[in-house]
Length: 187
Image 1 (cartoon, rainbow, N blue to C red):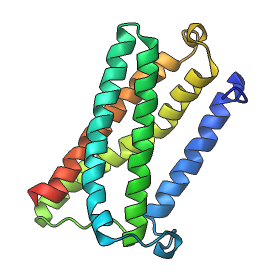
Image 2 (cartoon, rainbow, N blue to C red; image 1 turned 90 degrees about the vertical axis):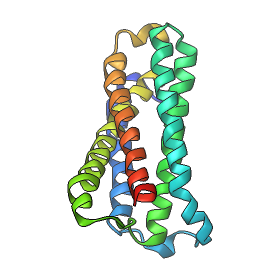
Image 3 (cartoon, rainbow, N blue to C red; image 1 turned 60 degrees about the horizontal axis):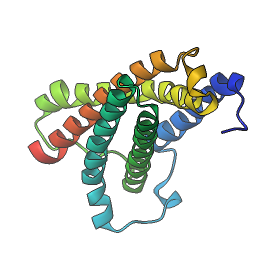
Image 4 (tube, rainbow, N blue to C red; image 1 turned 120 degrees about the vertical axis):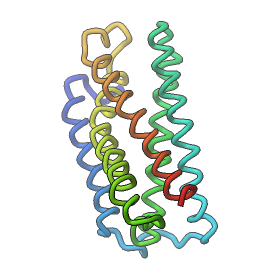
């Protein structure tokens, strides 16, 4: 990250956010044909939601630990936890998008239409909205941390943005687990 200058953080955050969201919405919108990715075995596609639920739970734990460690002043552990949280998020997203593109769209809700309309879809919508909002916030916090020394970070918006990003990220991951449970275990 030495090649990135401190003043480039906002523009790089914007570029990474736009590219990331374009890939996500392109995949979700069917802009990427299933033929663009290798054909996976059925067992692999079936396992992805379960693996992603475990990844989400691990991310909840690492975000929580990162928050705890920074409150206790342990910057190194905080940094490792937040980088691991980001790696878990990227892994989750790659697996989710791979499954989405391979199947040609999202899984349909197998439960009653009333539950889908008043419980599942609102929960899914909030989960997705928070995930979208988190993308630029997480990029910004990570890029600030990567381009500033620990001493310099106190003069940036890293802590304020990081708190917001972590809180929204936690709720988004928790709602993702609830969506998973509703989709794959309740119905």
